[in-house]
Length: 330
Image (cartoon, rainbow, N blue to C red):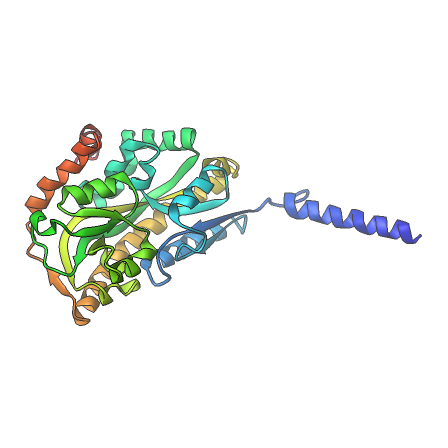
């Protein structure tokens, strides 16, 4: 009798476990996306990702949940992207520079002065060439772009000296993310690129491994980089468009209505966050000025635009750049 009771208990436990994993008859199967980004919890993007998660969970009645991890808690970006390619239920906020390691053409979005307004950035979604590149990322490299309506603002050079022309950057070691378009862009604009992860910028500046960085204003305040940098030089050389990527294999395993919810709410939250960032940029700039940072506004932008073309030439991306810009009416 005792053995029979034990067998029944094990059978019931196994049945309960099966129901928990597979939903059981009539129950909805649930999915979880663990979403990673390198920015701090005070960055506008983090709240934007939380909003995205909340709306997706509500729209799918809890069928799809997104767990958001800030400050690279799940790991560095390049490692996460490789896990995504293997089918892990992980997402990553990234940029076209890193995606260009798989599909070279898409890196143009990260090039100097490629787009210069939110409207131009949003128009990229309708570009046939951009759509082809996204299909190639998914079909050949396992990376599904959920959306890229997240515009982080204009990147400027932050240094410990005034920068007004490309010549002023000569010899300065400027931190860049580890991707070719980043490095060639910084080199074309006059500086020496040094690849560092975002979390290594502060100690890198302290130890003088680098002389500056090119970032957006809220990056500086959230990471307290004004403690080791004195000048904000408004080159506005890149309007940073961010891409939200997940595993193509994982995405294809979602119910169609979950896929739709994930994409549509990504776009909505991204555009709202992008608008918020415009205000956050001004607030961060004011905060930095109050803290003693010098802002250099009289920058020779035409000289920087002309210099930036060398980045596209160096990577053989001139034709790709011209084609996409034509498609978006740039």
